[in-house]
Image (cartoon, rainbow, N blue to C red):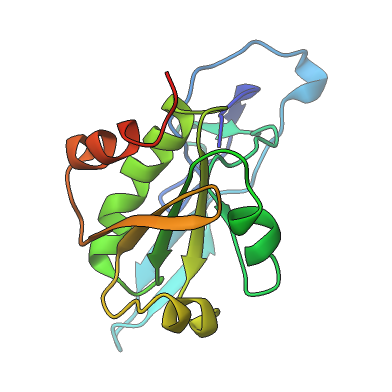
Length: 177
């Protein structure tokens, strides 16, 4: 998601606080917000207690992100035919699950490809835990698995967290000029 409209917020203190990495834009003083701050303290039972801080310590950056469209959209059993099979563009579909480490590794690569090939390629992701019918229909036994479709037909599959170059070389076969 694109980060925009970032601004600096002066807070009282923050050992447990809100922070984000972004650039600072100057805003009118009416737009500045003050957040209460808190400190952490452990008691004799070693349980964590969070208390309001007594004095200001530093400023923090807060980002207000405008809505941005995700390049890789989720697809479900109900939307599969309309989004993937009926698509005129070549389609890349990633089969994944939230608990899968390699799936989390390949997700940023798929996001990059979706941005690079925007308009030439449609990218979707299928959560195999929530949509097991699609996964079983295409014989998905390992995740992450990336399937390539062209004109509604399954063309190729890649299993595992592979380098971006492997996915690019496969995509180039199905993308026109």
